[in-house]
Image (cartoon, rainbow, N blue to C red; front, side, top):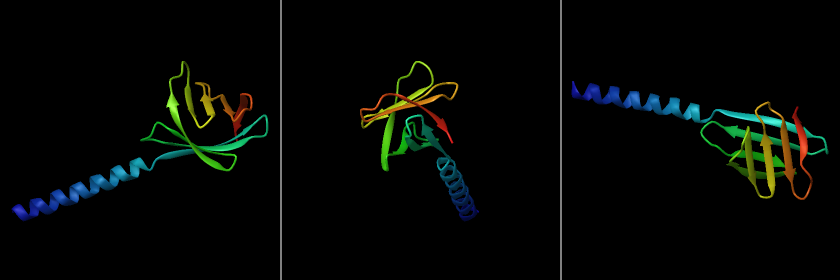
Length: 103
C-alpha cells in the first residue's frame, strides 16, 4: 500500500508542477505606435513586475517604478507610462515625451 501512495503522490506533484509552469507562461504583448513615429513592442508576464520592450530594434528591460496613477516603468534612458485609462506615453533617448496608441 505504501508504494501506491508514493506513486500517487509523485503523479500529484508532477501534475501540480505542470499546472504552475503553464500559469507562469501567461503573458501579454502589445504593439504601440507613437505620434513621433516611434514603434515598440512591450511584453508583460504575470509573475514578473517588469516590462520588456523592443524599441529601436533593441531589447530593453524596464523596472516598475512608483507611480501616483497607473504604472510607470523605466530603465536604460527609457520611461514608459500607462495611466489607469490606458493612455500611454514613452520617453526615450533625448526625445520629448510622446503619446502612443496600441495598434
